[in-house]
Length: 100
Image: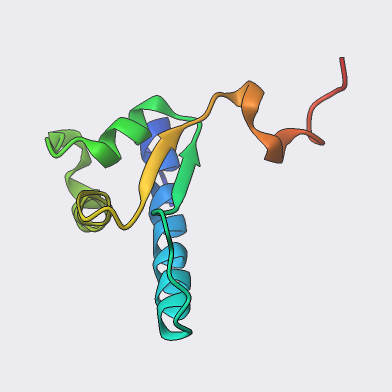
């Protein structure tokens, strides 16, 4: 798959995470385990984070329209939240960077 922008690449990762998260939330609902707060997806790309929350669709992103509408619907219905996290605060990268 060829991506034209780093925003698009990060956004596609958020889409994949949203799909998996929706499945997990459905499973928890079937098991009668309520979620007290909506889950949060942390993304290190400000543009991708803004694209998830902003209902204004950018013309350069027409080819990812279905993904866009799926995430916006989830965010607008408080099913999940997409938040920015800086590279310095990403716990997942702790072992991939040299120690100070």
